[in-house]
Amino acid sequence: MSLRFTKMHGLGNDYVLVSLFDQTLENPAQLAPLISDRHRGVGSDGLILVAPPHDPHAHVRMIIFNPDGSTAEMCGNGIRCVAKLAYERNLARANPLIVESPRGLHPIELTLDDHDRVQAACVDMGEPVLDAHRIPVTLGCDRVIAKPVLLAGTTLHMTCVSMGNPHAIFFERDIARVPLAAWGPAIENRPMFRDRVNVHFAQVIDQRRVRMISWERGAGITLACGTGAAAVCVAAVLTAQTGREMTIELPGGELQLRWDADSNHVFMTGPAEEVFTGQWSL
Image 1 (cartoon, one colour):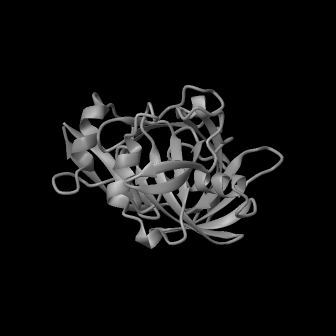
Image 2 (spheres, rainbow, N blue to C red):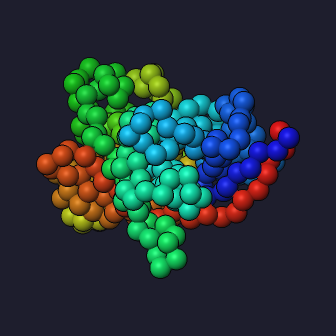
Image 3 (cartoon, one colour):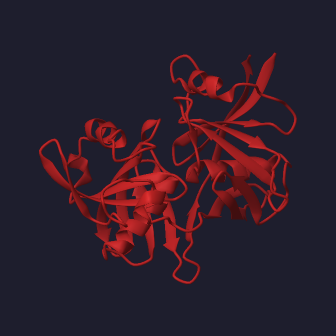
């Protein structure tokens, strides 16, 4: 028995996508580490299942597994891939296309080329969560904004935001000097984060441009993190370093972010690319 899949990426943040509209999959949490393995599997930052929605207002549903088999509530780069796959495979020919995630419903405006193929997508990422107990983070305060924390003898200033999944953001003058491979897991697994945390170091270039690097919970260093970029956008505004619209530079490319003052929603625009299709033997 084999499973059809599509390898896709958003700015190098790559995923194996499996449609459950015409096939079934048992034990996806067990498959995720195998298929995500970059030496013995397809290689990816996670496994995403594209399924019929539960909510009647949605067109498709997204189920996300990290490379370690754990689940994620939301994935900003992955959801653009889901929208592209759904539209181009005729799972849902709608624009805007509404994707259901564990966090809720996400309307996505698709930018189409002359051949009716998806070139970019603007995702409504929803409202940021700033209440510490809902992120969750335990630090003895209602909100965690530029709070000093000690790591390896260095004082860092941390801002915490949830975009459906938890993020810890640290602004530094030069992120090229950050030992991400060491600091990322050390912060991810701190006891103050009950569900672990995604870790981002950001550098403000100017009022409309920010550079960032990411250590993702359950995945490690990635070329891009969409929910992380949304969280960095919010954190930059909260710490009065930027306006509400910005370009965020990630190792894999650029995303456009806007934290809308009226709706309180964060909007993210970026590309999605298909790499190849294949079959995995079960």
